[in-house]
Image 1: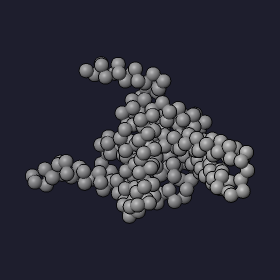
Image 2: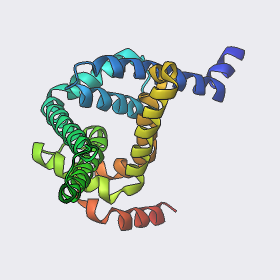
Image 3: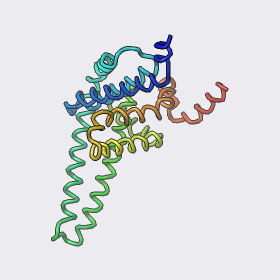
Image 4: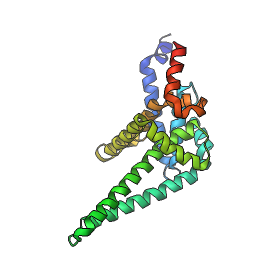
Length: 229
């Protein structure tokens, strides 16, 4: 009886989720080592959160593996494109900053490099916003290849709260890596992904069953809530 009470207790639930966070962090890091598998790895992590929230009782390794198997092929090309874009953007920012810091830079070129740096930074931000939406899009929807890119930007701009949480989570993950590296290897990736999933699951869960309501989802959510009351 005492064992049953413990298993059903809130403390046990917290411990169980903490264990899942740690193991999913490890699995996500390992499967991300291929670089172009990063989208498949993060998507599998988010899909695993969704599975457990819906009552899945399989162990973490099996759940993650099944999710990875279901999305790795269709995400590889997307990942490769994001990696290339990331490298190009990083190189562009590095070149502009290097030129702006040069001692012999001409006065007329300062404005040119500043504008170039600003445009590159904004483009990088758009790519990052789209990238943060991808695990959610792969988890809840089945868009075509080019439509996936478009929806990544659209959803990232439309649902700004989810985007802000995503950006804050990335910043937190980077800060954890820099100042608490050992902790990062335990929850530095899975915790940010869990936060993104937590703030988005109601919205995206609804949209996954009402795909044509994306543009008017706010009004439809309100009507649905009224009907439930």
